[in-house]
Structures are given as C-alpha cells and as structure tokens.
Image (cartoon, rainbow, N blue to C red; front, side, top):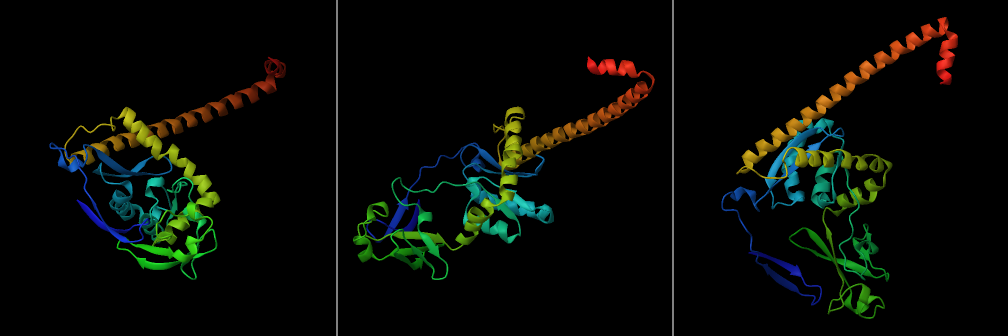
Length: 294
C-alpha cells in the first residue's frame, strides 16, 4: 500500500491518495524484484567497460544510478569529465549530483509530459527574481508552498483565470486555478537541458553513446548471453555480469592489438615497396612508366 497527499487540480483541494499495487515476487529468487535483474554499466569512449553494478529489475534507472555512480567516482573521480546518459536519468537529483562533482552531463531531448491540446510547461515563463511563473496570457502564478516530495507549488488567481479566453488550453480545474510544480533543484536540470544540451560539445560527444555503451549491451546480449538470468541471487548475477564484461574488454583489447600489429606490418611493407619502386625507377624508368599506364 502506498499513501500520499496530493493537490487535486480539478477540485482545488488537498486529497489523500491511497494506491494499492499487486506486485509479483519470485518465490525462487526474492532478490530479483520482478523475475529479472538490471545492470548499471559505465564504459569509456572506446567501449571498454569500467564499472558494472547488478540491481533488481524493478528499480528505476534514476534510483539505482546513485550507488553505481558513487563507486565510479571513488575509482575514477579525477579522470571523469563528461557523462552521456539517456532520457531516463534526467531528474533534478541526478543532474545536481553530477554537476556538483564538476562534471558535465550530456542527455537527449525529453518530450514534455503534457496532455494534447494544452499548453506545455515551458510556455509558462519562470521569473527567478520574483520566484513566480507567467502564463501565456501574461498573468502571475505566485508561490504557494512546498510539498513533502520537494516540489514548489505555484498557483494562479482564480478570479483572473475564470475570465481568461484561453482557459481551456490551460487547465480543467473546477475552481479555475492553474497549479505548476517546480522541484527545489530544478535549476540543475535546466542547466543540463537548456544550456549544456545546446552546446557544440554536446553535438560532438552524445552521438558517440550509440557507438559505445549501446554497442556493449548489444554485443553482450547477443554473443555472451547477457539477455537471460541463469543464476539466483544478486551476488551471483553480479559475478556473472563482471565475467561477461571482462571477456568483452579482452576481446576489444585483442582487436586493438591485432589492429596495431597489422598497421605496423602494413606500414613496413609499404615502406619496403616504396624503396623497391624508387630503386627500380632509377634503373628501369621505361618499365615503371609502363606499369603506371596499365
């Protein structure tokens, strides 16, 4: 059972929400959460896995991110400059944690979660100086209170909203009052989405994510059986995942060493052929010219 107090936009009153969920729990592996495990995995720009943490499958990525991120910083804090994450990690808490560690967070565009036909949240302008919102009809939504979840509530004047010509696109509240919530750490999320996301560095680094970590998961799922859970318990699955990613790193190292040795041999052969052709050109200029025409 889950219980909390929320603001009802339609009635304009404080309501008590009691939500009951039927959660299936595995009888053979209670640590899995929902018959599966997930892995918080970090890799460098070259696709080498540097850290992986096994977590229950019913934990959201933005929640299980923190223990994995703290382990990553403990090992490589001075070497990390940028982090490329997907849209599931765009929360004020994640943005605040990364930016406070003097690191840049690169994340994609996230579509606003708004009903069709209504104004988007970004169409309401936030005034930092007076701590209020301005609606599309140039009316103020003033600060009211901060709820227990850390969101500040801004409410409009019902008398002004009742006569507003664009009320239908703003709210369906029966008391003609629009309410906007803003997290107390919202400025960190705005810095990531409105400032860092529009920099040339974002265009350079974020597209490489599909070539690095997405390629790691794709290879390990298809070629190393990471798609299935074959063991019971989070510790055993953690060990299995570490073995899989270790094999992945060894495979990449082998490819790199072969590529380096191949380039060395190729450059040596190219140099010898160049010397041979130069020597032949001096003695057999006509034969060299004939080959060039063929």
